[in-house]
Length: 445
Ligand code: UDX
Image 1 (cartoon, rainbow, N blue to C red):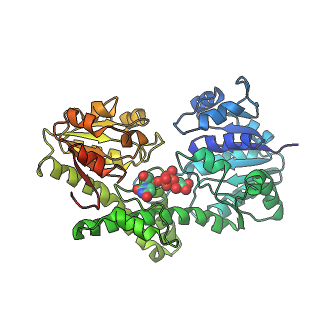
Image 2 (spheres, rainbow, N blue to C red):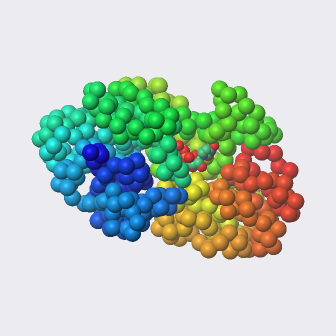
Image 3 (cartoon, rainbow, N blue to C red):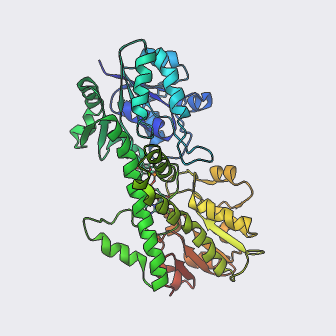
């Protein structure tokens, strides 16, 4: 009999995990407390933009013509408790309002709702990103409140938005924190396909499993802030950070990836994870170990202000009043509609608040951007956004923007100045078409 799997929380992580588990051949039941989400998913629709996810969902959701029928959704905790051999908890852990620490209320609520419904033997597997020590606490809660034979494991998730399906089906590593061989055996069964394809399977204890996730994200954030710090020095010294990144990246110990200087990192993970990590280290008395993350965070936030200053300089140096600023990009990265803590929207918002007339265009993030910043101007295309602009800001590196025709855009603007906040456009192409091209950390032509 194939294992029966439940997935609790159907956001980015949960919806992708549920569809991937069905793809691996398991019977899957997804739960969310928001009925509208369950209605959408049951109809084979995904509440966010993620390449390939809707197709995968439709391939498996019961009731859709031609589907395997292996994937269903519910709002009933009783149904989940009766159904699953393995329960994956995938709810989110956002930053607490006004604090660095992360908000564990969704995780705590999920465990509190699930525990008393676990009437048969089950493995509960935490996937949410949590402060180290949470798994120990949640295991004790299960011991106390679950009526059946129930165990906990911790299995952090490393998926990237925009590549979520691929990262889930072909993970570059699987990390499991377990307390028994039985739990390890069950998780090896769940992940048999990716392990057979070569994904490393790392078995560890609870605290290490929890720390692997926050350590990985802290390292990535540090790499980005490192290259952005180099960009600041390059600007002061007249160097070229893109060349510098290429050259140091040839050293295999450093590597080329995550060394793209620009307006910095955003999104629902890196910023809040490094802050929650600092907060937790402080609680544990190890705050000194992570003070460097404060610097990583401030280098990153400084990028946004620096982009605003470059834009101010481009429109004459003093004020944005009466100036038209086009912003290409609203999402925190391309191939996603996620605008959480997006550097692009942050820059757009700052310029707007300083009196600039800002018009934003993004291929997929318009609805979310409008909800978050209803007072900004929005256009239906890049060409529309740049019409009459005194300066154009390229802040999210969508392929669509790389494919733009600088000559065509040049005819629409008032002044052909482009500031490339992602170091992703071809400077020669824009300069040849008559534009003044500037990028962060690179020499002016
Ligand atoms: C991240 C981690 O990569 C992933 O493993 C974890 O599970 C969740 O958090 P994600 O938030 O999807 O994933 O985005 P990621 O691709 O890591 O990019 C984060 C931010 O860094 C984006 O705003 C991106 O534009 C920026 N970035 C990335 C840079 O500024 N420069 C780079 O070189 C790379």
